[in-house]
Image (cartoon, rainbow over all chains, first blue to last red; front, side, top):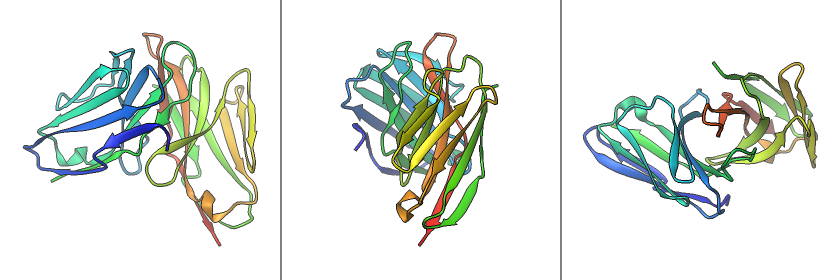
Length: 114
Length: 114
C-alpha cells in the first residue's frame, strides 16, 4: 500500500458513456497527478495539481476533465471517449511545491473503451 | 523535447545473476532521476538521485547517476524471481511554473527465471 487509492480498479465503458475515476491520497501531500500508461509507451503525464490549483495540462483532449476539490482528492471525468483511450490510468501524489520529492502512485484504473 | 530512454527493453536472466539496467536522458532544468519498480499496477519508488546524492544502495539494488553522461544505471545482484517486474526510470524536470513534473522512459521488463 502506497497511501494512494484509486477507484474503480477496472472500468469498461462505451463511447457515449460518462464516467469518473477517483483518486484519494492519505499522505498529506499537496500535489496530485494523472498519468496514462498505454502498452509499450512511457507513462504520459496528463494533469498536475498543486495545492488544488491545476498547474499543468499536457495537451490532453477535452473529453478528459480533471477536478481537484481538495488536496486529498482528484477526479478524472470521462465522456465520449475513443477506443484508443483504453489504457491504465494512474494517479500519483507528492509533497508538492517547488522542492524535489518522489511521487507515490496508486494501483491504477484499467479502462477499456468499447 | 524532454526525453528518457531505457535499455534494454526486456531482459531474461536466471536466478542469481547480476543485471544492469540503463537510463539516459535529455531534459531541460534537470533536478533528479528516479527509479521505480512496477510489478502489477502501481509503480513503487526505489531511488532518487540528485546532484548531492549520485549513488544509492538498498540491499541488492544500487543505482548511480552520471550527470556528465546524462545517464544512470540500476544494478540488481543475486537476482530472485521476485525481482521480475518492469523497472521505470523517470527524470524530474521543472515546468515553466516552477513545479515538478516527471518524464518517464518506456521501462525495462525484467524476467528472472528459477
